[in-house]
Image 1 (tube, rainbow, N blue to C red):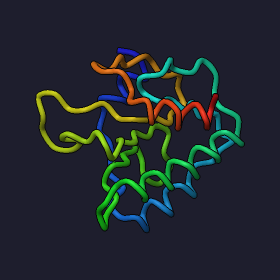
Image 2: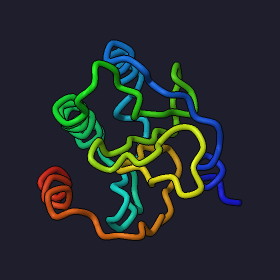
Image 3: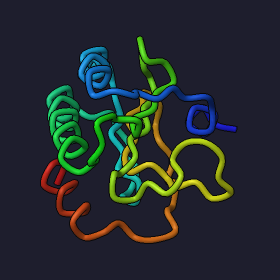
Image 4: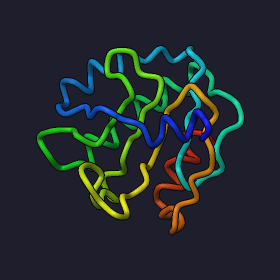
Length: 139
């Protein structure tokens, strides 16, 4: 099993509240060599620039707050909440059963990781709106 697969299928901790999410984002050093992967797009082969990581965090935070209509977060997961190196971010519009047990859990919408990501090959193509959002950010 690759390091990416081990992290992807390993134990992750949820960022439960919006306040926790604010603090969590501050623990991510944008210059630390993060790969930013939109599941459904080709995985990146190089880490993103610090500027691109900071822009992604700003934009994904705004998207989550705008589209996840709950008074809690609960759709961002990390290998370590205090010093993350692997982060799954679920799309608020494609949650299915993102926590707990499921025979067919949804893939996350986005992954931030410090190891090269592998193509997760979602069963369905990304919605056009998400493709436009991603390409406006990283196109």
